[in-house]
Image 1: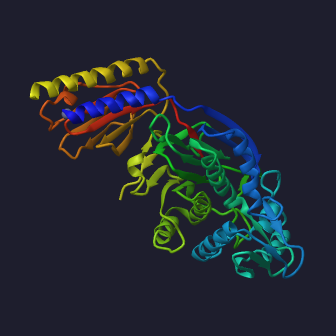
Image 2: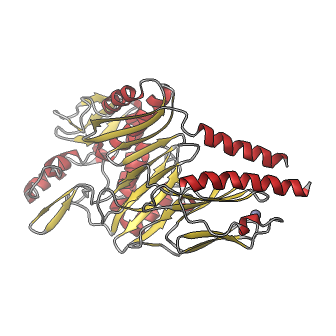
Image 3: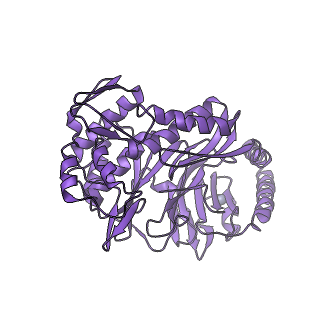
Length: 334
Length: 115
Ligand SMILES: [Zn+2]
């Protein structure tokens, strides 16, 4: 009897307080992409969001750009503790992907410039740049980073958006925000609830338009980051060249995966992981996912793998919160 | 006592049905999902368009069929959840008060698309 009254009371409370805090929408550009926010509550949430988006980026590279390139042999730069943590994880991913994922891919991604390119670079240029890509040629401490050779660099393309979204969430919470959906170019960080419910996040259909999704994830207080070749690419002589480069060959990596989504409380880790897992493909990527679950320095994460053949493989921890909604895909079975 | 429990169940369900009735006028969109919770914890989220059966810890089952949802084999004494029959509109809820089970249809698109 008592239980029922309590429940009825709770239901009424939810219905009455459903629309209590003020909703603010904001958008800005950072990390080479559009960053949007829907925030409930807080003081000056729109202004807090836009300034935090720029601030976060400046903690990853000295000039707050997407890349940093050294100008002399043995150059040392000051780094943030956050970048130190990222470099540690990047080093582990470099080892576990046998060098395919390389945080020092900057000279190559700069050469390819997939965002603006109309044709692939010359083979000789690629070979030349490959000599400058080697994670092991970096040395770093909690506050400094040294490049062995001039022309070497770091590229925050595979971490910045996840990191940046997280960074703005911390700032928004500090300013009293209660809930929010933050998207940095399709990398989403969520906090709080909407009318007492978790958020509904669509997982983009890699073969569809930007507004098509293949499934719905019901989550909050986490980051959700997806990597896939469909995000950025160009076509030349009937060949598709995308932005996910294999640092060993210098060319876009072939993968049997359409996309990899990582769900993790740490956006930077989710961002890096989604890139590395995509590079490894359906089978080796899943093995890498399982290995990372037992690797010190990596937080627990859940994943959704979408393969070229339309199979969707979901890790056990997130499966109850994921609903496949497209008939073009089928769930993976053991 | 038993009689009063039933009355409160009916009041509660009537309140929810009333709210849901209003919500049901909202347009249906792609990706409507069914959320099954036990004691407040989500045990399953299913696409409304995908015929499925979800087993409940009390031995009952949630059946999603032809974009409708119903509870079958309920173990609760009143079996009101089963008697509610099928729900199909966004915002509609089936509640099993004795076993603290809720089955709710959510829709109205998504809050964000990742990727
Ligand atoms: Zn019942």
